[in-house]
Length: 421
Image (cartoon, rainbow, N blue to C red; front, side):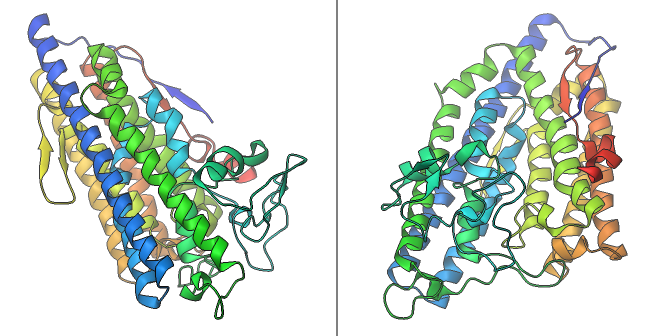
């Protein structure tokens, strides 16, 4: 992955050192408050998902499967807005793979289509199917998987054999269990797992329905626990809050690093431009549920949230306070106006993409070769994200923060290399 390094040349003027320090401290408090609320909301919606999963397991039906899927979709809304806290905060970076790692070789977990390769590249466990295999061999050692527990998933299955695509936990593992594979390519339709895959006894489809239910239950319990861990780290007295507030210049740099890296390398590059270059539906983020349009939208909204110091919670209440925007407006109002406008442009472009998807053109359909309308929708959002990253660079300069680094992406910086991989 290519890294882009930012430099600063402008010196902040117009504020005394003590006023600047006070303002920055307040900005960091707002930032930490938004993080705490976002992760608490992610935990709460995951607990709602867990209740819906329990209902599905207790009484499998079209209705309970639909309710569990709806709860999963709702749980993604606050979580995706927290991704702006990645990159600049090591505690979040080190933890994030527990809940949102992707893509995953889903054959590690459960049955897959007959055309699914037994091994994906170097991953010899890509079709292990632990649900059907209570004594799998992993790294040459037979594993007792007769009971599927959160501990088995976390300690043995996740990243098994050192492979990053052996994702066994988190939102996307649960998504796969609720929807199943999306076998439609760039055509219409998401995954279509039947509720009978969770029926124990007569009527079970897919085999091993009791173990599938056990895996879904364990994975959901693990997700709730992982989110509770991060919510606690941002609560008053938490280590993540302390780390970002103890050094004001470093804290503001962390905000902008997170904004820039999610905007440029992660969202514009790895999650959007790469799929467009390859015309590959496997590159969409929420690929089993066809929810990628919402994931991208809420990522973009999260970036804007942290700049403006304002987050709207699922219940409609608002967390807001002094913001980076306020700091920039005091010393370089033209830069703040530019930054705000570009954030709005990007969110509008992502919303247009979302509107099109909800109108019948799913994100994987947009990726189809020859879909000019879909290409324009995605590229417009990518352009907006790239442009707002340029404005983030100007914000860094205006605040005289010194050099910070923003994640790059071959998809943007060296498309030929990205396509060749």
